[in-house]
Image 1: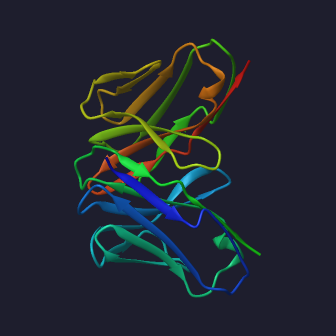
Image 2 (image 1 turned 90 degrees about the vertical axis):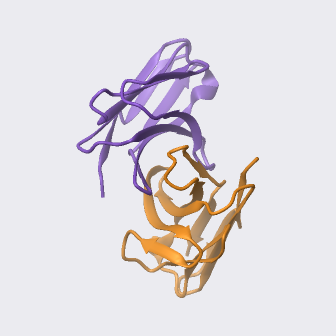
Image 3 (image 1 turned 30 degrees about the horizontal axis):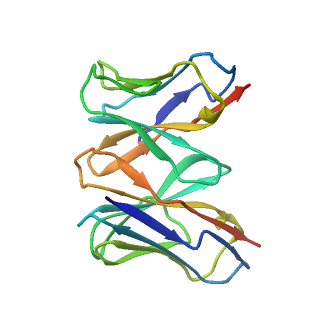
Length: 113
Length: 109
């Protein structure tokens, strides 16, 4: 069966510090991968998605970047965090365009102080 | 991006009551999905719908893919306290999933 992992689960960082959140998927090959941000427990905002290694599409201009160094690894980064980067970050995977659904990781709660 | 309008925004119901919520879009989707999110956790897929008119059940949950392909409905029968959470609809087109703004459900014992 497929599983998706995210870490860390929670993170408190000062403004201006770097960020690296990691997401890995097990039990599937060549998944589509997604990063979302959720503010105040509502509304999922798509940040990035990837259909393959090294292929990243960005949905909104922002202070963040994403990379996919391996087939089942997706990383969300920032060189300098802003207060507005606080939120709940969710990684998700899907099987291409099959429409079988999108499956979410447990999330990372980021607080920027 | 595409907009999915989900309603109601929040619901407060008595345990045992039935619940209905819906999601509409100005665009056509090929797949509709319904998720539930518990506080501090990632959304969990409840039901996936693949054809216009399709009606699918998962226990006490029933969802329908609208005939126009621009809407979907989720019903929960005989609600229980553990149904509390935020319910999201999502539509799939191409490689992208578009999410509704969520319906917050509170069940009063």
